Length: 196
Image 1 (tube, rainbow, N blue to C red):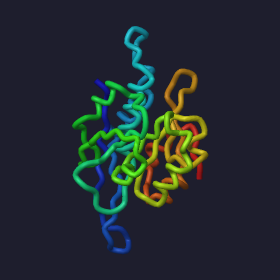
Image 2 (tube, helix red, strand yellow):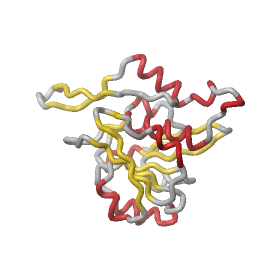
Image 3 (cartoon, rainbow, N blue to C red):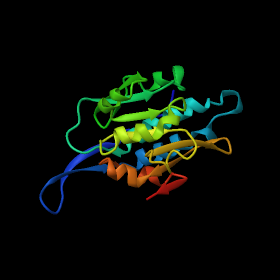
């Protein structure tokens, strides 16, 4: 069973009197994030999880530590665009909640369907068309994630990779801001690279 993190958002009044959503993290949540992001070290050789099982845990944390603008629906639509590299490991996300929203997993190979998603994983089978995908999603509150070389440099918000046998990720803050998203500093501190 993968560890999951609950990062609750709390509406609080800021200096101008307007309600603003902000992250409220308990020290325990931060500890669980650390363990989850670095959990490869806690597995023995006999039960070493696969690359994509680890990446599913990372995906959950990316969703949990991202703040979307405005009113959100009851569901958080997580869309896989192209071939699904996660396979059975996605079952760990089914029915889970993050920030009071239930994660709904969708698969599509139709670029027009992506507008209904809050999170889009761009699979390697579609990365050849990355510019067109990002143009379609620009200025929309959609968290884009990939695991393809240089994807963050091209505008994907979060890009995962394997470095020295461990899952690592880069974050593109400029792309996140352009799409109206806020990535928690608690998440960014674990990024191998942050592009501004």
